[in-house]
Image (tube, rainbow, N blue to C red; front, side):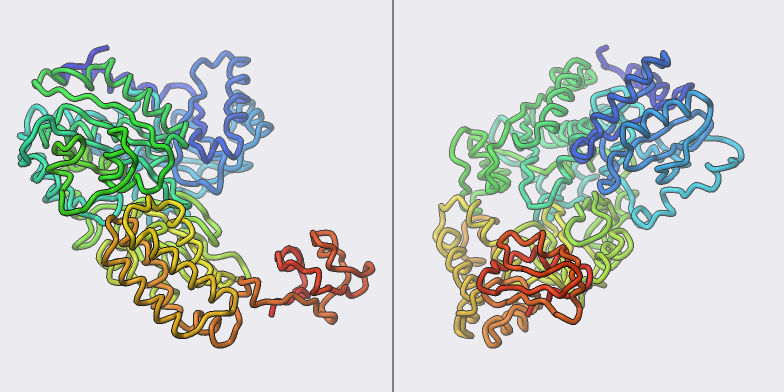
Length: 636
């Protein structure tokens, strides 16, 4: 069906609502990459097979990731008149039992995670209750999403549809208010009014330094040259980061609608989405969404009869981290090597093919329809004075609850780690958190009351970046952490400028000296000055922000560096040249676990008798330390 009028849009919305809130039971399976990695495909097939046996057509659908990655595979049960029920860590056996229970008119209690009473239709003007009247029995006692620590502080704006809709179903997206913001922009707002709304709303770029989005749009609109290009940066390359991938897999039309609104505001008719080829599910999801939108008349010529035309092409990146930098990304689209250029040439004036180009990342584009639909003043009420709205983070590392988290700007590091993340594993202590990807900084425990917003992180020596967040406990060596991120950046550097090509390598060499117990205090001073020189002299953001992990660990963990230099020891017990393993004879009960685990045969002993470790054979892999449950293996 071609959607050319508001009446058409309303008709599609009605069909979509009937699918989202059916008159018969429906089951949703989280089929984003995290779910599929945990076995969701087998669960989906089991449910579909059982539904066929019961003659329930359309009873099983797929959806995206709601953020509970550590509880995958997730399955949602929607029964008319009941709250939406979420089940965690579902396997094939339980999936079959669930379908049988629902067919018999009961609700399974095993594997239950939480219930959702209200579906917040963010773009539709108000919440929708799943049920009316009182609840009884198991469901009445079941915990709600907002009762879970993981969700207490969250507010899903950019992720508003993830886990609720089938990402391949356009009618689902429209049912939740999708493309109504585009219709409003095209039929009742001027381009200048759209830019003003985004500016007043305070939206800042979610992909790196947090530049004001409206200011960038206004500059591109005023720039001379034709055609103008609108670009989406989906080249997510930070270690441990998967915010953009999950948004694409769960709600691709939000990105398309945001780009359409931005193109209208800027005066563009052509757009590109630059996405990682290593994201096969995201690529396929985008391909289907673009085709579906084009078939519906939401991409192409004379959209909504407003005289506005715009279309989008996909460009697959080859995996180069540097292509996340704006000018390197544009060079890659042009078919040239992905190398950045000097920043004094602004891409909003001379970008793709030397023409005005506006680049924002996936999360930024997903926020745009919200501002147009709900208003700039509504959006400004969320977040802090200088950082409006929410931010999505991938919370990973030494934390219990690993997942995708969207919180209002200003939530503290402590709440992210201890409340949402559930804290670090037992017998460990929180030490630091690395925010902003490999070019971000390491924030220590002493600053865990720091609010997470653009300006506070910048003052602390870190950056928001795209939203990678790695939690570290006291088993982490900060010298080793700095070396890890430098190794990554050296591998990913394009090598075009000397500060990045040679400076980062020299910095890594100095860190290697510290790890091996050969460094000096003079080396420490050289590392500091060299980091500052690279920061000032590098050509692009990769090089200029590359020293951040070093500078922040020097700033907050200098005593750990000095222990490596002056004491020739690694306090965390990580650097192999500075540690030795031994077995405490008084604590060893001869359980044989370390004997079985040692790859070198360095540990010997009889069962129920204290074991011995031959230091000449030990390769310091740490396997014995990890498996010992009695603290008998000691690192010194």
